[in-house]
Each structure stands twice: as structure tokens, then as C-alpha cells.
Length: 231
Ligand SMILES: [Zn+2]
Figure 1 (cartoon, rainbow, N blue to C red):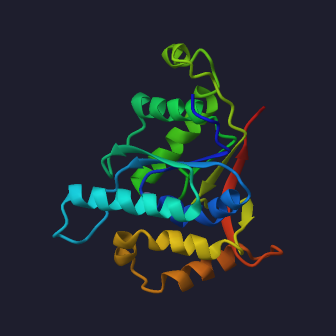
Figure 2 (figure 1 turned 90 degrees about the horizontal axis):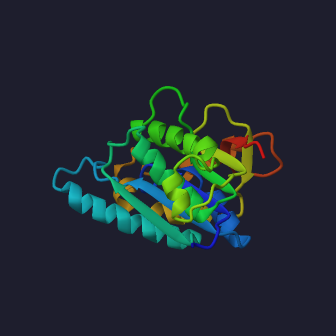
């Protein structure tokens, strides 16, 4: 049995968490909270460099993700290893996520918003939807997956879900003190920063996070759609 975790961050690709939630992750780990990452694909199609094979890119991106997680104090990274651009809303994928939620028993799950309009990576849309369904009701109900129960994976009730990339933002997290660690973690994803259209990543990110914090008492924010689950 694994020790329970406070937070499980479930992403489609290596680097999604660093763009989406890393400032808040750094704050949580500084407060002593346990954070686990689940990365669903190996990101092996995210390049315009024709000299890179998918296998090599996948290996690079796995290493980059581990380095970023170390910067943020993430306890463990689980790689599901699906090919990039391959995720589908299937019973098998949903069960994989339920298995992990029941094994790690997080209080908070963080993932990408499946309902963002319109340009949104299909893997993001599928991951958000499958995670939402896995949390409620599949991880919760003991009659779902009797085989998992027989393995000792008891049902688990997640208390809240935070979705990054949301059009409908209803929760802003203060990342003023941890913005620099978000940037440091993001810089671990060298292969992706190279692909990024804007060479001034830090300035671009600071402006975005400042805009997210408008109307708050703090300077820089991570922004989410927050959902509390029924007890
Ligand atoms: Zn992504």
C-alpha cells in the first residue's frame, strides 16, 4: 500500500503541469504537502525537429519531466507511457486512472479542463474528461471494479478538483512567492521551450500570471476552475 498523497496532478504530456499548476505545486510542497504527478503520454510527437526520432524525443521528455518534478519537490512521477496524440476515452484508460486514485488516495486532484473552447489539444480534452469521470463516480463506488477491490484498492473520495486551462475561472491561487520556481521547473523542459513561439518565456508568463491575479490582494496567480465533490 502506498502512503496517501495530498495532491495528485494528472497531465496529458510532460510539461503540462509546469505550464498549468507548478507555482501552486511549489507552494504546496513548501507547506509540506505530498504531491504526486501522473503523466499519461510520453510526449513523443511534440517537436518540429525532423532529426529527432519519436523514441529519442520520448526519452528526453521523460528526463525533462523528472528534472522539473525535482525542482518542485514532487514526491513521485508515474509515467503511463501512452504515445502522444493517442489518448481516447476508453474503459481501460479510465480504469488506469481509478487504480492510481485509489492507490494514492489524494485529497485534491488537478488536471486540464476538458471543456475549454476551441483550440485545445485532444489529449488535454480526453485527459480532463477521463479524470473527472474517474474521480466521480468510478473511484468512489465500491461496486465499480470488483477486481480492484479484491486487490485491496478501496474506494476513495476525492474532495476537490482543480482544472487549469479553464475558460470559466473561479479560483486563483497565490503564486507570487513561488513564481521563480515555476519558471525554473518550466526551463527543465528545454525541448519544449525551444519549440515555444515566444523566446521571452519568463516575461510572457509573468504578464499572464499578473493578469490572472487582477482583483486579488496578491501579485501573481495560478487560475483554475475549482469543483468541490459531494462528501
Ligand atoms: Zn499538453
